[in-house]
Image (cartoon, rainbow, N blue to C red; front, side, top):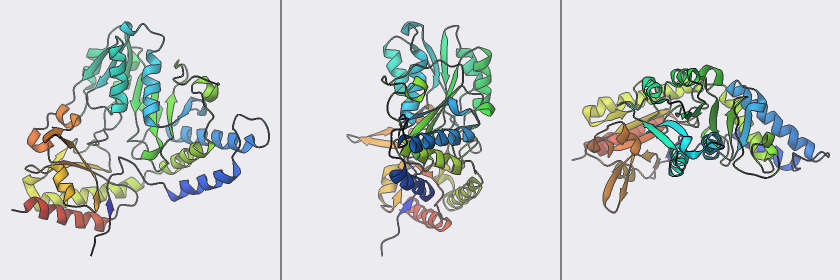
Length: 376
């Protein structure tokens, strides 16, 4: 009998929450007009967009006018990083970031670097954390931006954003954080974090793909990446999708209740304890043991290749930390930056839990993993 599928890749993408889908269904029939139109057909769409903007703002603790709707986390990151650099002589642009950022941050930085900007790629410790002192040491008179992710997508390590933001603010440098992985899992109130810009990706918090948001604090000048009509207060051209924005707004309402993360963390902790008991030193945790997302476990099985372990469990959807190209094993850049030895990093698998994760699924998985790892 075939085992039921198990989804433990919520950090890659979340399923659409039924309550979000319900909002979308209503929008399909009731708000088809252009939100920018002043007639009766545009009014429902415009009301929905602005309601969604308030809902996102309520989650972040900011003003509605500080929320820009985008197509997702990648666009939000590009808007923040390239936008801050716009208007400067490229050779006078200096950006501070880390070696463990998502490609949606590293690639815009590399793009600016090719145009003459200077990028400081800060190292991380063995847990994947940036040292605030390294940020302060890297700041120069021409530093244009500090961009450090809130929580890592692979290992779940949470960065000391509050401390880093205080340092950036003291030097008059804008601070951006990619919070795509942390929204809905831990608090992302912008005044508590002290950031000037913050990225949200809808499909990481049970909204559909293709929608996101960027918080931009009042006073931050940010020209548009996409030029056209003056949508989103002139910062992003293109007719707003009332459908997608309403979905993100509803997802943010649901994300304000973080109590469910307590149960998810308890499930993950029990899973980890089961594996430790069964495997001992044959399983290793990557990332910070405490300062990490409550739903994320990045585990290595030394002596094994993560992709091979996953291949033995076709019913499991999870992510591996290494890739095989032309017979050569390439370890995750995040694990490499953390100094994880190749023999450990090669066996890394990320298990990311979500609202629908069941304890019996993890019990079965712990037993099956133990069988695979202990097999002669």
